[in-house]
Length: 105
Image (tube, rainbow, N blue to C red; front, side, top):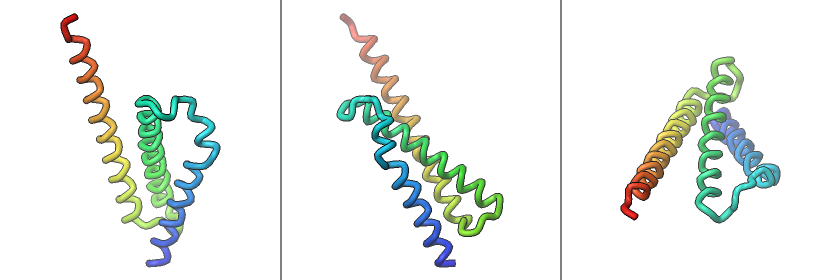
């Protein structure tokens, strides 16, 4: 059982290493230091976490070796929390925009 969890951790590390490779940096056209750049990076991380969780769940459903249920559940929970965080940030940005637009001139 311990070897399966180690293999799962190694697989996750490989996925993260590939995601943060040079090809990933070249695709980012948004300014690196600004708010928009940081927002884009955060949305990309949320999307990657959801995709990874879905891939792991599918691998578990297909019975592939080395994929444990607890790892799948943790990845799904992380993806859900990341999505909820992104949703709350979006709500705060929209609220701030509405507040600024309603200010008297």
